Amino acid sequence: MREISCYQDGEALLRSLQAEGSSVARVRSLPGAAGQIGPLVWLKLLEQLRTAFPQIEVDAWLDCADDAGYVLAALNEGCKAICFSGPEEVLHKLQEIAAQLGARVLQRSDLETDFSGR
Image (cartoon, rainbow, N blue to C red; front, side, top):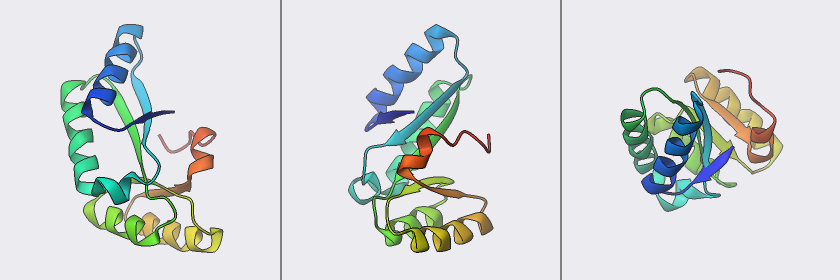
């Protein structure tokens, strides 16, 4: 899992993966990016990367830090993969909401080991 903060980071990563012959990229935003750039900018960034590198599946996670409001906003805007670092009881409620929308919410620490759901 690699962190990207802008199109140039993502482009450099996908170019290197393309050169290696990889077909999947697992990326996440910087911590708290949902509150800095917002979900719409994140989704637009991913759209541009996926258009530029259609042969690479981009599995991308937006970090909402410990703010459940950012998670709900991201879900509302269509984000399908979100990480959250708040209390576990809040996480479970957010996961129930996300599941109804076909999305996933995981603890940031779980992203390193959770490779299911591809």
